[in-house]
Length: 86
Image 1: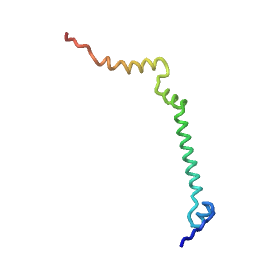
Image 2: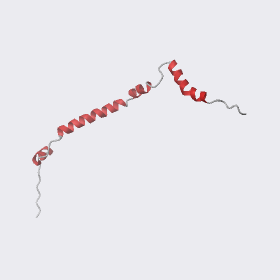
Image 3: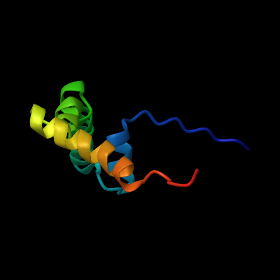
């Protein structure tokens, strides 16, 4: 013997019938927070934001550039002394 029952209802009606909780408000809050985090991450990786972040590490004027260049190239060459042996 085979019995087939067809029930036509929405997911909300089925959840209510079986006594399961409605998680839609919680899902909406989680999705809104997730969307905000995603948009903030995308904004942080925009070309303008990246250039602004990199420009903080670059010298701002000629004196700072000269000083940074001297620090970068001056110390390794100043530390090595020519060998007097021939």
